[in-house]
Image (cartoon, rainbow, N blue to C red):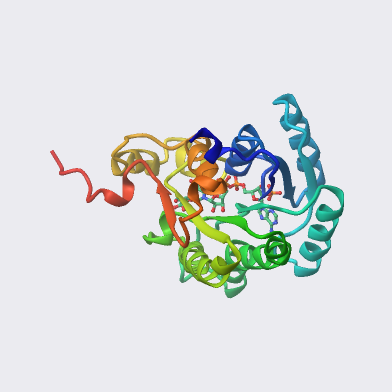
Length: 260
Ligand code: NAP
Ligand code: GCO
């Protein structure tokens, strides 16, 4: 059974993995035997991340490109295939959020979030699929969100993007299953990373709110997502397709605590 979770001989590309959830997922896939490729927008962050991976005994391959730029993505995937090899596992992790009331959000700000969080995963998936098909299969994991299922004030663009990413996951799963490509999602709950730092720090009321709204009564950590990622990246999930695996401490199962 352990072999079913092995990623020995596989090449995994994790987008936006110079820190945060992406780095944790990359480290998990490396721990299961995968060779790690990652990207970021910023060359210095890539260099710093390479040192951090190396300190963990991981000889990662870092690239600088923007997941929303189809030309950059196409050229970078070709470079990766030449320098490292064909990508077996793609984790579409790179993402942004803008917390702005809808009435104040500009169309340009809305488009920017959609571009990174929804168009980016499409562009990346479209770029790696041809080689996966030639190779006989692959795994694509899209990092969705509680906002793939729920809304809240100020995150209209992000919720629209992550809701769309859930449906993109299901659609690509249907379209590429015949090529033995499994496309699934991970839907993290509220995870302690730089992206959520503004919600956790300086006594922000959201911190208490989310702990009360989570049956596990804590913020998640990037490490909480590592096992689910290895599962969806491995042959243990070869008959799982079009599924979003929520790793949320029970948030989506919970109506909320009865006031005392
Ligand atoms: P984060 O700390 O903000 O890290 C995001 C990463 O994506 C950074 O490395 C960032 O690089 C990179 N990135 C952003 N735009 C990019 C682009 N256009 N091209 C390439 N890389 C880009 O976020 P996180 O908390 O680790 O979240 C990672 C993913 O999980 C996101 O998709 C997020 O929506 C999702 N998620 C997070 C939570 C949570 O509670 N934290 C929960 C559910 C889902 P730069 O630093 O150079 O900008
Ligand atoms: C927010 C948070 C969330 C998390 C995550 C929850 O402002 O509500 O940033 O959206 O990032 O997506 O699953």
